[in-house]
Length: 121
Image (tube, rainbow, N blue to C red; front, side, top):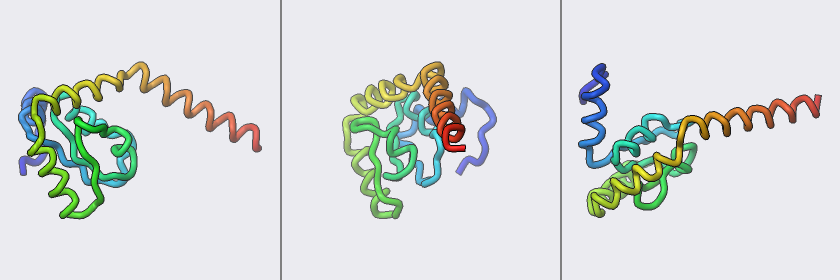
């Protein structure tokens, strides 16, 4: 365990050199750390519920139930896969999340929710 890594360049290198990133959290709201891993070409093993389950696509990672056996199986699938293809798929998936598009979609969602509240009030 490394603890907090302050140097961004070193952190980016660590993520890019990893065989996989494991994200076992159920309550991830957006998944910035997971998205950074994908952008680094590192496949993701994530819980099959919540925001990250929408982020992971075949080839870029796997989702699994939140238990040790499922995560071990997911990690085995990543480690047994085609590393080059995983890197390409992970980067391609991350490329679909551009800040201007993500920000616009978030604002549109908020406007929809606020509009619904005004109509019902």
